[in-house]
Length: 416
Ligand code: ATP
Ligand code: MG
Image (cartoon, rainbow, N blue to C red):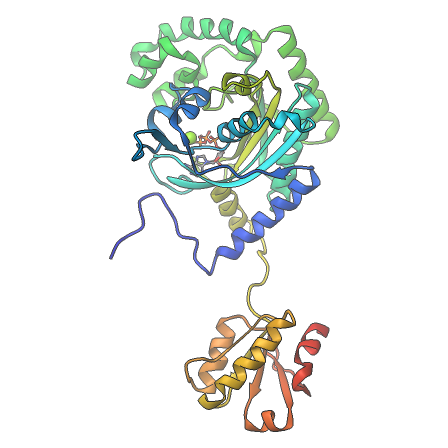
């Protein structure tokens, strides 16, 4: 037997309706927010991720699925959706559409991580990217989108944590302060942090090593280093959130693990998923489009981890809706299976989901099967029914029967 690769999962027929339920809800919220779907390839040139996410991040330095294709190009399975969408935005000159432009996607993403509950090597994201303005109203719209998306899934007690990591100007001063602070602690930190210290000291804040984490807790706080413009942006956003009634908490510890963020960063977190408590993360990335060859463009976005969202939904007993068929046509004897298939075919044409016996089983076995298929009704077809063209429709939930003409089955089921 060949097994599934480590860190990946099958979505089996018995659970795919949960994914469809969640995806359907998210698409509806996207429509409410005037966002259109964008679909980009599963793989990109490696360079795109190195340049945008940053080569000192965990994602780029440790987690990417990178390979050389037969043409000798370096290709990477997308570890996230923001950079590919930005690539597409620039390449297709989407700024020529009227701005702001709001896009969303439902994708799988790939990261070589240690698999555990809520952490996979192929995982799924619902992502949103909004292009075209630096106004804090865009940040508010994006956060409110994320908030409504979570609520649409029945997840109303996921907490919003907000921070600002400033622009490249404030970051310069801040990184100097970080260097001064970490210089005294560097010998107690992990090898990766020692390496990153000189190249990208900000990344020392999101090291997951417990020892490094403890040291990072005492580090200077970026909010104290914001320039006037970034400070005003952050304060304006806080005011807008206060007025909107979306509860949040400013948390200077939120820096996000990708280099492209500027100013606003946020996460929606829960205590119910152990170490994998971040259900959704996002922020503003005003320098990204320019860094990959476009014009300076204010952008803000987020990505929700679908596996984590679904785990929480299960925990909260969300009702994913009924799956099954409208009617199962029971064949009284194997010779009648052809006639039953013709009846089923007519029902399907009328928009009734239907199935019938094809393997010659007993009626008892067929009723059992109908039950397993979650059929709402059963109709038994024997010689008598075919002759009189009258049938009995049996409601399987309570056994109630009603009689009608053979060609009225669809109409009767639709009435109920
Ligand atoms: P974490 O800190 O948990 O590693 P992250 O900061 O790397 O998360 P992002 O890059 O912000 O995650 O991705 C957005 C969301 O995608 C996360 O909040 C999470 O819900 C989900 N996610 C990220 N990596 C994985 C993974 N390996 N498996 C499952 N979900 C993931
Ligand atoms: Mg991660």
